[in-house]
Length: 447
Length: 122
Image 1 (cartoon, rainbow over the protein chains, first blue to last red):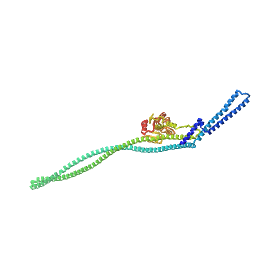
Image 2 (cartoon, chains in turn green, red):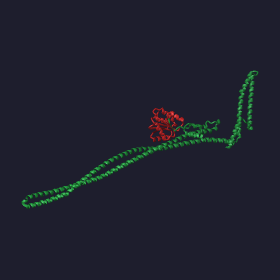
Image 3 (cartoon, rainbow over the protein chains, first blue to last red):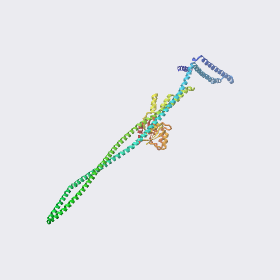
Image 4 (tube, chains in turn orange, purple):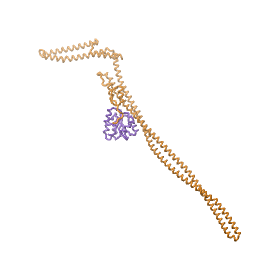
C-alpha cells in the first residue's frame, strides 16, 4: 500500500505540474513532440496568412486600382474573422496536448505496479462498498426479523396474560357471587339461630311448667295416697269393734233368754245391737274394699306420674339436641364470617394483582417504542446502503466532478430533524452533536 | 364504558385491551385511522377514542379531524397515545381537536386515572 501511495503521489504531482505549465520537467522526447505541435501550428498560421494575402490581392484587383481605406477595413475584419479563431483554436489544442503529454509522461514515469495497485485498490474499494450494501441489507433484515420475533413473543405473552386475567375475572365474579351467597347464608343462619333460640326458650319454658305441674300432681297424689292408706288400720279397728259388739249382743241375747219374760225387752235390744254390729261389720268390709280400690287407683296414678317424669326426662334430651343444634348454627354463622373475611382478602389481593398487571402492561409498550426506534435505524441503514453504492460507482463515472449529491453529515442532520422521541434525539446529540427538535414535553397532557 | 383503541402495533392493541378490560372497560380495536372511521360509520359509538398518531393508511391526526366533523361522535373525547413528543405535534393535535396527549410508555394505572378524569363516572 505504501508503494501505491508513492505512485499516486507522483501522478498527482505530475498533474499539478502540467496545470502550472512547468514544461522544463518534461523529458526531451515530450519536448520534441510539443515543438512539433508548435511548428505545425506556426506553419498553419503562416499558411492562413499567405492565403489571406492572396485573397486581399485578388480582392483589391477586382475592386479596381489603388488601396482604399475601405480595403484596409475589410482586411482587418477578415483577419479577425479568419485568423483569430484559428489561432485561438490552435492555442487551446496546444494547451490540451501539452497537458496530455505531461500526464502521459507522469503515467509513463510511474511504476506500472503502482498503477496496477491503484486500479486494484479502486476495485477493492468498489467491491467493499457493494458488499457494504449487502452488509446493511443483512443488518436490516436481522433487525426486521428480531422485531417480528420479539413482537410475536410479546404478543403471545400478552395473550397469555389476557387469558390469565380473564380467568381471574371469572374467579372474581364467582367470588362476588359467593360473597353474596355467603352473606345471605350467614344472615339466614343467624336468623335461624335466633329462631332456634326462641324455640328452645319456649320449649324450655314449657318443659319447666310441665315439670312443675307434674311435680305438683305427683305431690298431691302422694299425699292422697298417704291419707287413703292411713284409713286401713282404722277400718280394722271398726271391724274389730263390730265383731266384739256382735259377740256382746249375742251374749246379751243369751242372758235375756235366760231371764225369761223379764229379759224379753232386753232380748229385742240385744238383737238390734247384733244386727247393728252385723251391718257395721259389713260396712267395715265394704269400706275396706273401697279403700283398697282407692289405693289401687292411687297406685295407678303414681305409676302414671312416674311415666310422666320419664317422659319429661326424654323431652330433656330433645332440648339438649336443640341446644346442640343452636350451638352448631352459631358456629356455622361464625364460620360464615370467617369465609367472608377470607373472600374479602382474596378480593383485596385481586385488586393488588390488577394494579401490578397494569404496570406490567405499561412496560410492554417498550416493545412498540423499540420497534419504532429500530424502524428508524432500518431506514437509516437503507439510506446508507444507497449512499455507499453511489460512492462505489463514482470512480467509474468519467463525468464525475468530485462532488457528492449527499453526504453522511447531511444525512445525520436530516436524521436529527426526523426523530419523534426525546430519547432518540438525546442519543444522537450525545454521539454526533447538533440540536434536535424540542420533544421533551410532559408524558401526559390534557388540553 | 366503551373505549375504541386505534394502533397499528398488535402489542399495543393487546396490552391496552387487556389493561382496560381489567378495569372494567369494554374495548373495541382498529389497526389504523381508516378502520376506526369505518367502525364509527358502521354505528360504533364509543365513550372515548384512544389513538396512535403514526399509522399506515390513515394516521391519528387525520382520524381526529374526521371524527370532529362526523355527526354523532364529534364530541367524543380523543386521547392520543404516541411516541411523538414534540411541541409542534402536540400543538397540531390540539388544533385538530385532541382532548389530551399521552406519550408512550404510559402505565396502565396512569392511563386509567386519565380515563377516569376524562370520563367522570367511568
